[in-house]
Amino acid sequence: MATGANSYLAIHEMTGAPNEVPATPAMQKIGRISDDQLKDPVFLASNTISGDRRQSPGKYLRDDVTWNLAYEQCYLGSGDTDPLTLAGLKASGWAETTSSNGWLGVTLEGATLTASGSTLTLTGAAEIANITLAVGQAFRIRGAANAGNNQIYEVTEVAGDVYTVTPAIAVDETCGASVFIDGRTAVDGATKRPIMTERGHSDTDSPEYFVLLGNEASVFTLNYNDGEVGTAAIDFIGLLELDPSNDPITGATYTDIPEQITYSVNKETALYIDGVLVEDCMVQSLTVSVDHKGEGTSGIGVAGFCRVDIADLEITVNLTAMFNDSSWRLKMRNQEYISFSIILSGTNGSQRRVHVPAAQFSSDSIPVGGPEKIVQNATARGYRDPDVARAIQIDDFPAVS
Image 1 (tube, helix red, strand yellow):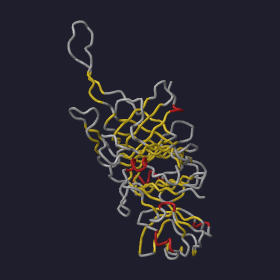
Image 2 (cartoon, one colour; image 1 turned 30 degrees about the horizontal axis):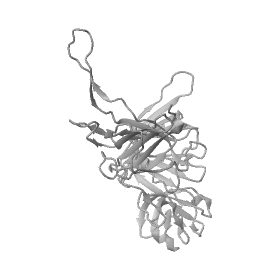
Image 3 (cartoon, rainbow, N blue to C red; image 1 turned 90 degrees about the vertical axis):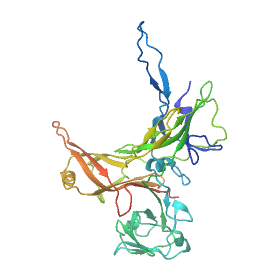
Image 4 (cartoon, rainbow, N blue to C red; image 1 turned 180 degrees about the vertical axis):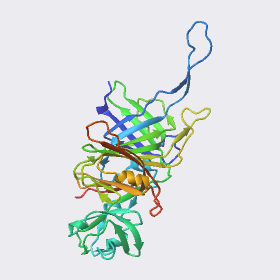
């Protein structure tokens, strides 16, 4: 009998033909998941007239290769490229802080932080020449002598070696050798990132393996509820389901599930609405949905889909909060642009920021159902911010040794 305890899901980013199994795929096992990968095929029931009241056999049309992957958001180690996040955003890749040490960062020795004008001037140690930052990119400073300078920043302007950042630099400081900069940023795009998946069940009398090819993310959802682990879900549209096999993929190599530090919504979590830290207990939940409007196209002689296309990007932010004032409703009526950011922290010092730079409230429900607390449900739609050329970004920051 198969159990989830002895099953696995492994993924491989496909760079060749999305409907063919690569010769030597590198499969990465992923953990803390639940999936609904195997769907019933699409059948056509017979509508012919039958004098004996018995229905004629139906016909198999094609595979249903739409499915959902749900998982807990985790820090997966310094070497993780996080293909699921890249697939969910359809990002072209990660913009890393340095060209020499990736997102793990380098020392800022000799660089200066200036409160007036909120600038970072990159001069000093040799490693500083390897720092690569652009407008809209996020980075983290840690180890500063002035604790207020240790935070996550975003670049708003670049002039040579001088970078204007937000939020504001707290105190003037010349960085010592123990001050570091790190981080990486991924933004929404239109890059198709097909994934091959293999689900294996090794504890059956006869091991079983199921393979889906050409899976494209259609909807990417991030969920944050007070007192729970942050979760994510991806609605995939695949091209083809292969016949089940008693053997794993021929020629594949497998990497085991890496270190997993979950991101919980707890006292360390910081939520910003329009750049202002939410310090009361009003907001109970936040959900961010990235919908690429994916659609599979079927055709004669194809078992699954011929191709998967994406359409307009739709970003939705849903919030549940205890009603306190009418500020959100006024912003909706005035069509004001606002931003949303949530920063989650792992127990190893790693962090993740989800940032929607430009959104407008589209609905704000404040029902009164009796003497209980009034719960406010608001929805905002995210739009492309022309200043940074993106509608959503996710920033990662590594563990601190």
